[in-house]
Structure formats: structure tokens, C-alpha cells
Image: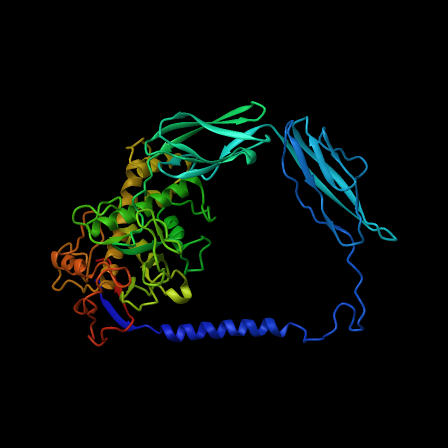
Length: 533
């Protein structure tokens, strides 16, 4: 059963503690500094310290293009100028390049390959001092590349940088344009441009042409953007960002509690603990994130992809956290960025035993929940995955994936699930069942807690399928939705304080608790518990 606990939040005490901790850090740093007038390296006798010995400053060299003019200058510091540079005995530069005594490397390389050579710099002091360094310099043929692709593919409407090496000047053209894309911000002198995928799917071919006439073609597959409409609409909706990057449980090796939860469900390789993981890990993570937001949109009567539709509530769930100042494709810059323009709820671990989620009351002066993703100020707001995952795995009989986590053989099925292109075989059916089942489970918890933040109380007496029931059952057959009376309250409450709409009504601000003792207007928190039954 799910029970509600309403308590005051000790936010002010926490902030005072933080300020004290910062002050202590500053005190320790200042204590390590010498007092004004203290002696320096000269020992306090007023003399000057000897200059440091000459040392080479340059650590790496840029790639050279085949038959392309090359220029780079080696740098040193310390000692006494002027400096004299030379190759060390036995070292050879790439054919076509020379090193001047000034440290200038120049010429045009004539042979492909990687070349290792050593240099020595000597200063002009008496006696002279010297330093040496070894470099690896690659001579590359003309080569073009497209960066920041999504697992080797582009998404409709997104932009990607394109560049070339091994040429003094490069132009880029679309010789095949199935998506309706475009080349933007072209700068031939730097061999760079931006490729923007068009609105249609297909394969585009970008041709890079060097000043010497050499060409290279880049074929890019354009897939439908699965989160194109999941953006923040600040001018006409309440904006709630579901943050998947938080980490409260420091006992696991993953970058976030969400990644740790995916490993528990077999939707991530448990041995892949990096910030992104394998390609299969990345696509599975994206599938779950997208499905959570799709289910949450449906809960709030919006279209699954994020559009408001005919009867959708005035609330948006952006896939990416809004920047500052907040920018929305439909609305532009917000005139006066401030707190209370969007809320943050997190997918984290670390809840009390049996507590599935926590929500703060959304008020106009609530600084705990607004625009805050840090553990120190924001608190544990959202869904507690350490409590939810074991219940989910048991309720959905999720055994196949934890026993054999996603891997390279599942990438095609995961991409099909992400892009909605239909089953390619493999484990598609099981992946679909678990991803969508988990998203449904998470979304009802999020919808329940956000509903509390917006002033909804538990459904009493309980009504089968009500999102705001005080007790609920997790299962593949369960369905959840707001009751008509709750929808009426939400329409009156949205958009919430600070986002251009009418404020929450006083009668909708109260979260009923067992003691009924918390007055309206205080920063209260509702913690909901869910137990399997």
C-alpha cells in the first residue's frame, strides 16, 4: 500500500550548513598564504631569484596534409633569449618539411605516414642551457568527417559539424539529398561547415572537395528524430524536466543512479561503467528515457511525442534540460529568466525504505524544486530507483535480460524500438516489453508525485486505475489515469506560479496528510510509499 507522509523541510538549516562549509574552505586556503611582505624565493634578502632554466613549452604538433603547406612554431620559455632550435642527431622530419633555427616548422609534406623526431633548444646564456623534446607528426591524406552523429546516424532537423584535413581549402556540397538537408556556415578557408539534416528520412551524400581537386564522399543515414517535439514551452505551459543524470547512491561505479538501475534490469552491460557505455547501452538508455516521457505526456492528456493536442494539459516535459537564459524553439528567449520557470524531478536512488518518490509543493517562492539539480539544495526529489527496480523486476518477471544484458546483437532491435520501425527479430519483443513496462511504471510514479506538487490529494476512497490512489499494484495488466475531478483541478492549476499563468488556487495547494497539521504556504514535502501486494 502507498501511504503519504507530510513533513516540514529543513531547507534553511541546510543552506546555513553549506555556507559554513564554504567559509571553512576559504579559511584553509587563506591560511596557506604568506603574510604581506614575507620573503619569496630570494630568501627575504631583497635580491632577485635566478631565472628558471630553459624549457620547451610545445607538447603536440598539428597533423600535416599531404602536399599541403604546413606551418607550426615550437615554443620555449625560461633561460636567456634568443633561443636556437635544431634536430637532434639521427632525427628526421617528414620529407618536405624543415626546421628553422627560430623553431619554425614549414614546407609541404610529400610522403604519408607518422614520423617521430627529437629537437633540442639552446638558450643564449653563458653558460648556455638546453632542453629537448620528442614529437610524433602525422602526414595525412585529404580526409573529411562528420562529428556528433547519433550512433553513426543523423536525426531529422539536427545539425552536425563537418570538417576536412589535408587541404588548404575545402568546399562541401550535397550531391544526394533525400532528407532535404542543407550545408550551413561554410568556411572553405578553415575546411569546416555545418550539415543540417532535413525533415525527411533517407541517405544524404556530402561531398568534400579540396582546393587541389581531391574529393571524398560522406554518406549519412537520416533517421526520424524521436524527441523532436519534447521541448519546453515557457510561454504557455508549466515546464517539468525529468533529470536522469543524478547520483545520490555513491556505492555503485556507474555515472548515474539511472545507469545503475538499467544494469539491474539488464538494459546495460554491468561491466560497462563509463559515462556512456557501449552503443547498446546508449541506445537502451535513450529508449527508456524517451518512453518515460511519452508515457508521462499521455498521463497529462498530451500526445505521446510531446504535442499538446486538443485536450492536453498546459505542461511540457522537455527531453533536454532547459538552458539559461531559457530558450525554446517555439518561444525564443524568456524575457526575465528566474527561478520558478521550470521544475526539476530526478531519477535517483537513496530513498527511505519503501519510499518510492518525493514531491515538493509547487509554490511561487519555492526555491527547493525550481531550476535545481544539485543534491545539496534540491534534495531528493523524484523517483527512487533503488526501491522501484526490485518491485518492477518481480512484477514483470524480468529474468531474461538481467541474465543476458543488452549487447551488440541487440542494437538493431533497440534502434527499431527507438525509431518505431518495427521488429527486426532478435530480442525485440522482450526488449519492448521491459522498456515500455518500466516506462509505464516510472511515469505513473512521476505523474503521481507531480500531481501532489500541483495540489492533488490521494483518491479517497480508492478508484481502480486512478493515478492518485494511495495504494497501487505494479503489473503489466495495470492501467493508470487521472480522474476527471483531478483533471479539472490540474486545468485550473496549470501553468503554475512564475510561468505566466494564473497561480495555483488556495484550495488546490494543500496536500492532505495523516495529521492534517501542515498549513498552506510552507515548503512541505510529500513522500509516497509503494509496496508490492
